[in-house]
Amino acid sequence: MEHYAALLSFGEGGWGKSIASGVLITVSLALATLPFGLLAGFFVALGKQSKEPSLRLAANIYTTIFRGLPELLTLFLVYFGAQIGLQKAIAMLGINATVEINSYAAGMLALGVVFSSYASEVFLSAFRAIPVGQYEAGYAIGLSNWLTMRKIVLPQLIRIALPGLANLWMVLLKDTSLISVIGLSDILRQTGVAARVTKEAFLFFGTACLLYLILAIISSFFITRIENWAYQSQNMGKERA
Amino acid sequence: MPTGRTTAEAMLPPPALPRPWTAKRVAGYVIVAIWLAFFTGLAIYLYDAWRIDLFETYGPRYWSGLKTTLALVSISVLLGAVVSIPVAAGRMSKNRIFRGLAYAYVYFFRGTPLLAQTFLIYYGFGSFRPFLQEWGLWVFFRDAWNCAIFAFTLNTAAYQAEILRGAIKSVPIGQWEGAAALGLSKLVIFWKIIMPQALIVALRPYGNEIILLLKSSALVAIITVYDLMGETRRAYARTFDFQTYLWAAVIYLVIVEMLRNVWDRIERRLTRHLIR
Image (cartoon, rainbow over all chains, first blue to last red; front, side):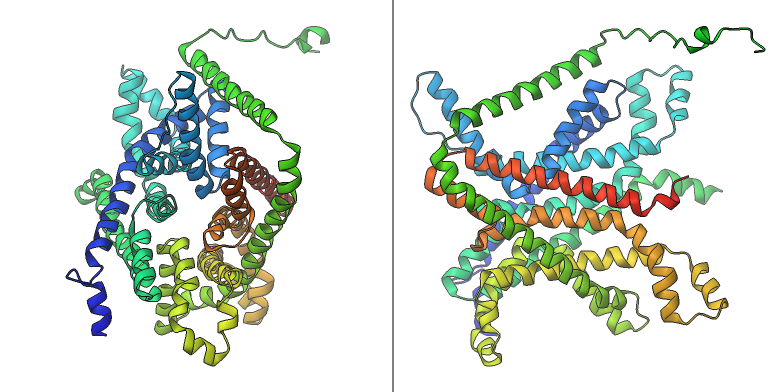
């Protein structure tokens, strides 16, 4: 038992420090992907519920591709594809150089694209849950398109989409484990290195699983708080009534 | 004819509404054009990069990889369905211990990445080698393919248990009571009245789960199982030709789309009595 504790400690001969840095990478990657994924997902959803058929078609192609490809393959396509593409582009300019894509950026892009295509479905069903009368009422009191969206539709949209988005956040958190394959030192890679060196694979991969579980528990704590915030106006109404 | 209109007049469709070139429409056309250019470029690239010797070498390998992927997914989905039944029963049990155990199982397998679970089983179980050898289980866990099946089965069982539980819970309690009032036994009620209604609710989530598992199955390439992704990685490592990945992407997309359409059809067929 002491042997295991020493292996996981932060001191000399312990792997605590490197695993902690892995946790930091995992969390920061997931957090960095989130805003980009949410924003892209929102715009794709806008395209999907547009009256213009060409916009709908373009948005549907996007989600069909990125929901149909395995996440690992998307990651490789982005990582190697961007590398080769940039190299060719540079070669066209007459410079012969090897390009290396930052694996962090590649992971962010790949995960963000996958996240956004799933998020667009969540946003789309939330859009459909908002009655058309809400828009009409907004226009009737003289609000512009943008103001109706911001003041009337968005607050309701967030409330409806929140459970779905929370689910996607959990999926994103788990999907970050894939970037260990392209060499980013996240939780799984750091524990994998420790496992190989110390030959205590079960201990370290078990630790990795536990860390992901802890991250999930922390996330659900924050998600509950966000939900309370999103519903606060309704709760206040209930208390008054 | 009370209105006195001729049939020809009545048949005339109303004139189409004018469709002005709004900013939205322009944006839509531009994005579709970008997609078109992208696909054309892709097709040209794949056509130019086509080499018969590559196809002859790697075509059969991709085919065997595809078969491995499909076998892996179908075996683990079926085994997972079997495992999910006791787990779902535990989740709904009145016994607190069973409920807690089933909850912990589901929480663990849904809360951790499948890749970490696969590593835990494939590499981690090696830590217990003497113990496993004693029980004669080492032969099983030594093999990457067995470990992949084991991990995928346990993982999908957790998801399927939740699907099953949700579906059974979605059947109103009045169905149980009504059947009990008719004097049917619990087992008959469950199989003949609750299950048929629950499975219809579960149909769509099951389809999604199969697709998710098919996509996740690419992970086994990392623990040296040569499925479609594994063959692709091997081919790329030997040729450094990017088209290897593109072909894999095309194959995966086609399979997922086929599966989705087939499942849609099955669903439409099975729920045709519900469509009014």
